[in-house]
Image 1: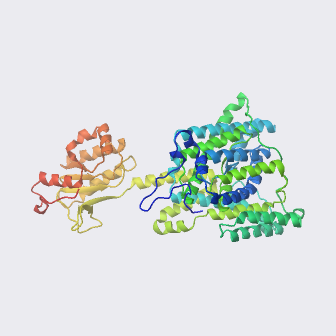
Image 2 (image 1 turned 120 degrees about the horizontal axis):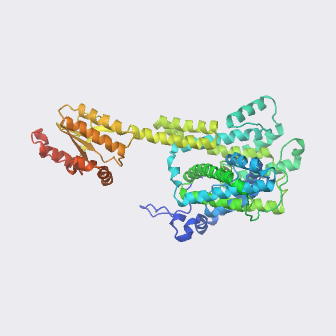
Image 3 (image 1 turned 180 degrees about the vertical axis):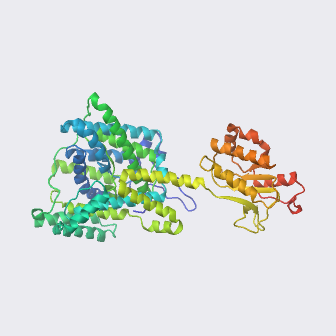
Length: 597
């Protein structure tokens, strides 16, 4: 969906409404975004949320059971880790359509703690896993209160596109064997893809499964064009009815089967003192991985729905959901890169989709555990594949390729990293690339020598205006970036190059410092070094348009008093006028000429 957030007020013409949300509420209400959405809920959204919730249910059940087993606990606890956390996040989470639950990225972390400590006891295994969820939840909540959600700002749009495209490709590869009616083994997407190709060439395709799955996928894609029709729900129900009617499960077609029964109950996960260290370490690792994954997915879907998501509240919502899982016989959870796009593709508009999904799973466990027993797994694969196809971002990447090739290739590198390394290492790679991108831009920023251009007010880059006039003995040098350790030496070299390039002997070097938003200790020392070099050559170092906070830093560094307050000018025009007054022998045409401020 690419519509604006329905909860955002519609401004009058000529105005833009202030961004509003749960964070604007006072007191404890600001921590309950779900209540804010409920207060602004419109009945027109209800049918979309209910349909999406029912579609989501067909994914929540098999995936929850599968990830529970992969985490070293009985399958029923995967459904427990689905029901209560979804309800908790719907109340405390800021994202409108993000789906939380058991996730493959956490399974290995949970298993690494549970397997050696449980000794094969399922009750002990779930106690250990539940306590890991509690630890992870507490850490996420504390991080949210500490406002550490800013880490999501580290990812640029091309990098987010790369991450999501990599996720989409990973999900696609994981579901292809299911669509063709067989399973493969592999530790990463590339090995799984190779195993899939080998199985395909070996003739392991189940023709019935491929026909049912392919038909389901085709129906979903066909009905997807009409937003009013719940295409995924229709396709899944059709596949289930077909299998049950023709008894295709007796012909080698894999189906979901009967569900276990029972609802989650409140329970404190007791562990022994000997388990504490391992559980704390595991819970800490889970907190890092789950928030890294959730923050990227949340921000991506916030952009798709043109809504605002507070990253700090996202951490709180994730933490509360994990606490709920821990105290209701569940285990650590995260956002889902496969179930969220299913909800989005099915037409989800608000958190009510997750509520419907949670209640539907609970209802299935209570009264109809056999209702989905004929749901073919190949149809589930088709649902996920359709959702993964919707995740790919191609059009905007084409635009990025046209206007800035290196950012395009940065996005592609991130996609490859996710596919080769996995989702979570892929996030680490994405953040690393973002930091490198930032440092690269800051390391070699734009700089220019300025001159006066006839007919244009102010002073401008002489490389763009070759006819610009230079003031004899005065070099106006613009540095368009903060000054910090990574670019300080480059600044020093470029400033000296500007002096060396002057056609006349230089008396003043004026740094036009309006773009300089910060200076660190290393850069301040380089400025002092530059001043020494210039003084030895009889050249005065001056600054124009430097912001007051930056001047305050120079005062703390002792550089302001060293250079003298008289060399700091509020505007370039004032610096030029002062220079002309100081040296009246300069070209007559500049004498008393009005300057640009």
